[in-house]
Image 1 (cartoon, rainbow, N blue to C red):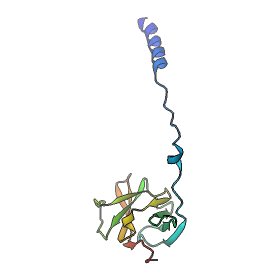
Image 2: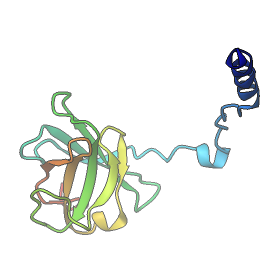
Image 3: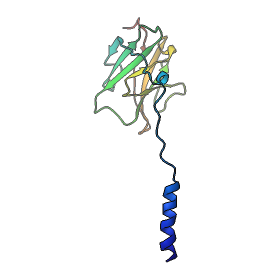
Image 4: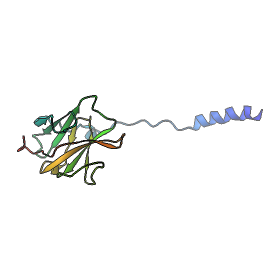
Length: 150
């Protein structure tokens, strides 16, 4: 009988004193602006990944001399869960694990993936890694991303 009286009272007090859910406030206008569009396609390649049907586009923003990005597109049957794109300088031999100097570009399906400045200067490889499966899905052929290699 004591529980029948105190339990509802405790529940009512608990609900009344429970903090409300926080509401996300919109970003300030300076932060909410989207990155400038990298509209100029420098080159487009379909056979960069030997075992994967991935189309790679190198994009450049003429307004900013160093702003290069990659756009990766693949068939639906190729896509793996949590597929991430990495950039690795040089021509490393990649087998089962990501090299320590691999730089995360972003998720495969996010659109334009900004490249670090040093990516355009030399030869590099792109690595597609499935975070969910904890495996390397594909490694590109060595590629030089600058304008001289169209």
